[in-house]
Each structure stands twice: as structure tokens, then as C-alpha cells.
Image (tube, rainbow over all chains, first blue to last red; front, side, top):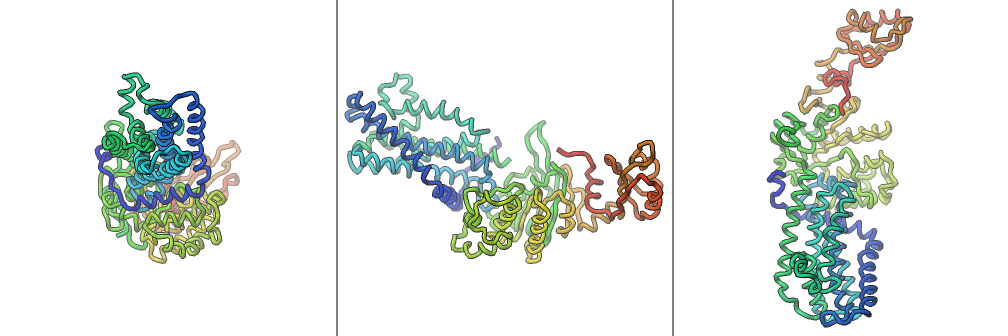
Length: 261
Length: 312
């Protein structure tokens, strides 16, 4: 890779035109999208929450389903953002050649990748907000502090979108994404306190788990839903922010290498 | 100056594996002209266009697009350019009108600015009444015409087309040619690449033939034909005598007597000459051979300069 691939992004306002394009397409296909991004996680949460919840006593001082709600919110945001940049992003970039078409206009590749990042975060945040509403309706939020989770899940959406864009830049085909899900997303989901507290993990695994972005997101969102101010919130949010910036930078460099040679 | 390229070099790969696809090209478009870039596959035409638009970094040379340096200000320069790429890349999820509106958005145009122009743009493309049509319902020719309309949303001063009529039927080709002529009449500068010599001859004020990354000839179609090829061609094919020998055998024996230059391609002998009278008289006495007499054209120049071998 040449040094110019790692040049800082030069963004323009045109990235919002690209965001708007993705939004207009989504609006036409909104119903299946809502079903996938909202209904699916809610069904999981209710099924596991009530199903396992009857077997399991209180977890960290609350009912299992109240414990699970915070984890579900983070994990569904992660999945929504990841799916969007991986499958939809790859379709746009490689199959439909949409990005190339847009670059014939006064829009740079930097703008397009940034727009994909922000769009995936917007979409996952919208889904997350809807899930939060369902959680609140079912009575698993303790106070208005839960609303503070919304900007946090937007940041988490940016973070996972940025990580996913690295995969999109490298993928030769859709099948490649299986590696990402099986080797990163799924283990991370199981280690980050989504379904059970991280204190259950053996120490060696716990050290790694604490580094993963999803566990940082869960560490902030779950307390907020339970009406508590999260401990070390600044640290967790900073980690998410730094991962977002570095991952976006790497994704952009790889995308430049792939498309601008 | 719509486009000025000096000493353009483009290399892919590095070190021992490096491949120079463009090896020093100079190109200067005059405002309002139609310029055609011809060349076999792999000559470097599309790469030259991509470098000119700033979509790929040049390895050497300088480029100025609509007065702005590329790639430093490529994004801004593209605001004044319209591009019709080789492969259609319309948004399949949008209707025709929505494609135009969304694309105009990339130029910073609001929907209220572009909506009134949609009927005129669609009419230009011969797609009246198709504003609500889905892209999937359009034929290949219609998609290409819509791509042309899309390239005009920003009223560009330079229009760049990469093989605009490849894969289209004759009616669609003629429509596109007519539209392109209309655009040059209105002052738009056009740069197009093509394999079709008839297209270049009809449309281009000036042209250049590119091969292996270098420009071989440049000039008006007439200049290029006059300078590089004999004015008349007689194509000879068929059977020469009862032994089954064909035009090739005939040519080997006789062509030099009657024509300046002769090329054999497959079963046909191409005889190039200034005056075909004696050759035609001779051929009239060969009952098995058939011939076609025509003026030399750009394709003859092209094949003479780039050869008749396949390019992959």
C-alpha cells in the first residue's frame, strides 16, 4: 500500500447527498428492514428473557429479562450496523457499482465511505431507538436515564460500521463475511456480557473480553437502562470513539487501494 | 480549456511486475469540439479517462480538467463534467426520475431545482413519460439513454463517454449520435472512446488512435485517412481457379502488379491503391473471385496501424 492510501480523509458536504440516497432507498424497502432490525431482536429478547428468566434467579440484582434488555439493545445495534456495511455496502460497492457511479459526480471516495459509516449508524440507531421503546413499554427501563442510551448506541453503530467497512474493503465475495461473523462477531457477543455477566467468564477470557468494543458498549448501556450512571463511562466511550476513528481510517485506506488503483 | 493532459503515464503494480498501461500521452481538447479516442482493447483508453477524472492516480504527467488540477481538485472539477461510463450504473431501486433527482443531489442541487428539468432531460433521452418507470423495465438502449440524461443534470461543459454505443441496436446508436451532435452544436465539448470507426468518423472533429499506451496518430478524420492510407480499397474474396485456391493465393501472385499494398486476412485480400481501374479490370476476368470496391476509411487506418491480431 502506498503512503497516499493512508492520507487523512478529505470530506465535503456531499457526503450527506450520499446518505440521503441510502435513506431514500431504505424508505422504499422500510417494512422488511423494520421486521429484521426490530422484530427479530425483540422476539429473541422476550423468548430468552422470559424463557430462561423463569429458570434463572436474579442476575446482578435484577430479573434476567431486565438484565438481558441492555445487552439486546447493544447487540442488535451491532448487528444492524454490521449487516448494513457488509452486505448492503458490498452490494453497492462491488455488485451494483453504485460508488463508482457516484464518483463521476463531485463526490470523493472519502465522502462515500464516510456516508456509508454514518448511514449504517443512523439505521442501527433508529432500530435501536425502536427497540428501546419496546423495552420501555414492557417496563424494563428504570428511569429517563435510559434516553441517554440513544447517543451511546449511535456511537456504537459508528464503531461497528467502521470495523465492518474494513471487511467490506477486503471481501472478494459475500461468503467472506462468514469469517467475520463466526470468528469475531459471534464470540464477541458471547463474551461481552450480552447474555450473561462477564464475571462468569474465566479470567484469561475476561482479559480479552474487556478489550472488545461490544463489552464497552454494554458497560455503558445496561446501567443506563437500569437507572444507574455507568462506571468509567468516559473510558468506555473513549474506547468506542478511538476504535471508530482508527477503523474508519484503515477501512478508507483499504477501500482506496481497492477502488482507486 | 476543457481538458489538458501532458505526458500522462500510468503504471499498475510495482517493481518487476509493473505494467505501463499509458506511456506518455498528450491531449488538448478545444472548447466545443467532439474528440474521439480510438484504440484496441488494452490500449489505455479507459485508463486515460479515469486519470483525467481523478478516479485513479496518474504515475506521471499533468492533468487539468476544466481548468482545475487533477487529482488535487478533481472533486471540484467534476462539478463541470458529465460522465457516461462504459457499464450502466443506474440505481435499480429508483425510478428514472428518482435516479436523476438523486444524482443531481451529488452536485448539490436541491430537488426543487432539478424537478422542473426532468421532462426536458427525459425527452432528450427519448424517454418521455417514463419518469415513474423502474429501471428493471428499461431495455439496454433505454438505460444507456437515461445514463446520458443523467450525465447532463449539471449542464456540464465537458461530456465524457466511454464506448457510448457498444451493445446498442442501430436505432439506439443513431439516436445517441444525433443527441451528441445536438450537444456539440450547443457548445458542449465531448470526449468519447470507441471501437466503432463509423462512430468516430461521423461524430469526431478530431480523433486520436491509441495503442499500447501511446498515441499513434492525431488529427481530423480526413487528415488521418489521407495521411496514412491509400485512398481506395478493393476487398477480394472467393475462389481463384479450379484447384480450390482462394483469394490469398491470387493475391500472392498478382496483387503487387495492380495495387500499392496488399494485406491478407483470413479468406480476404485487402488491396490498397490510388487508382483501382486496372485492378478491377483484371478482377473482372477472374470468374471465381468477387470483390468490393470502396474508399479507404478509418478502420483501414486503424488496422494498418494496430495490426490485425487479436487483443485480449
